[in-house]
Image (cartoon, rainbow, N blue to C red):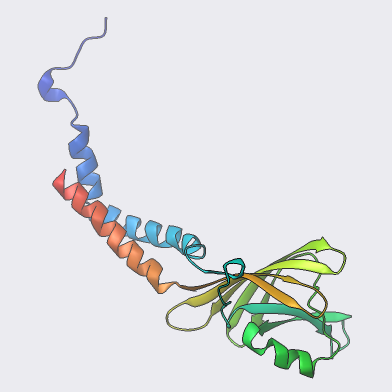
Length: 183
């Protein structure tokens, strides 16, 4: 038989949890953790779905393939905002919106664009883009579209602001801190 500890020697787990939650080290760690965890979640909260008749964000990035002017490779990928893609089409008559299957990264005028292309059928791809703009609010646009050689059909867009992740981090960390203080 295992001997029991005297009642005064027991660890009070509620007090331990309260001490940890209300510590300054946990406050900082929970702020960073909540902020980092909320960034990918914000990309999928809300947004505009074209199937519901909503308009796509004009800042959504579209990836096009054009001949490489330097001639070092057969074609190069160019990122274009949805709002300027018709102007792009008129200036680049030999473009195509069907890009090779796979994923990649394009940097253009202070904007970082990551993309993933999946072949749907011969001459048709689905492309998912994630554009991060170089501005103080950490704004960006997540988008998904189906494309043929000359046509782009957006299916989803969502404008995001990384600044909101900072807000969620502060609020979440202080809620945990207050819970720890109460315990």
